Image (cartoon, rainbow, N blue to C red; front, side, top):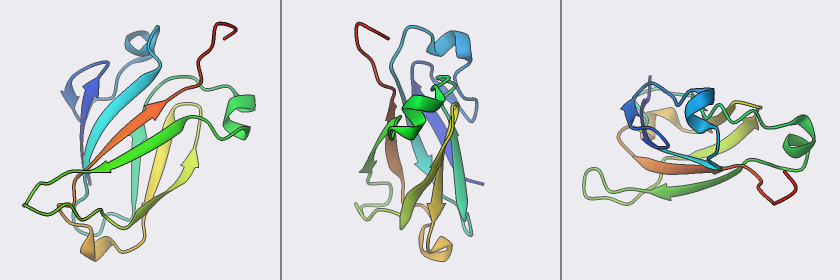
Length: 114
């Protein structure tokens, strides 16, 4: 199971932000370290994204490779689904993704009308 460390809006290892903690914020930032044979990694954001925004491609997800062992190689992964409270990353080559840490910034749409 991947090690997920949440940095914003809360700071914790493995425990996602609650709905109350996310209220008033438009992003969740988490570091993900895949472990051997992780084929799917679920990152919980609890932002209650409406179905219309999901259909429009939200939340936006930015992935940044991090250097854990002196290499900036990104785990071979892609976003396979978005739900109102989660983003699922599918790892295409689980055996080669070990310890290839990346930072995910999940941002919900925000405007003065939402």
